[in-house]
Picture 1 (tube, helix red, strand yellow):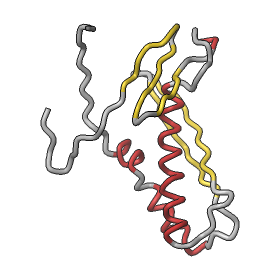
Picture 2 (picture 1 turned 180 degrees about the horizontal axis):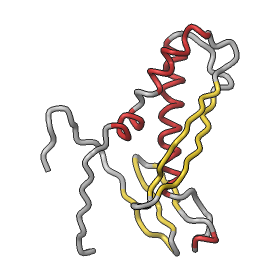
Picture 3 (picture 1 turned 45 degrees about the vertical axis):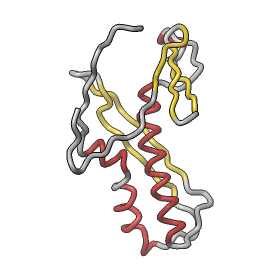
Length: 142
């Protein structure tokens, strides 16, 4: 696979089956458990893949907001991102994502528009609004 001048090869992660419908995600020495709720056949030992997907957007928005606040010497205490989403069908997918950023007390009203542009430019938001190419390849184990 070749990459264009605007793409760079990033490190990889491994997602491995552990038990039931549970998977372990391993990247940079970190390990996350992905599972399904009991009513979906899982043991509810971790968040679902869809929840991880939504969390990645919320965390990215939060990270960009914190960086913005620190760069402008603004408070970060109380900053939080809350997300909700709706499913869509044909094909089954996440159809709508909403993110609400709770601003720290004392956040200047004059900076809100700038922060809005910054968080809407976070890497995950950009990846959703400018979708990546996805290649899935099946290989024999071993």
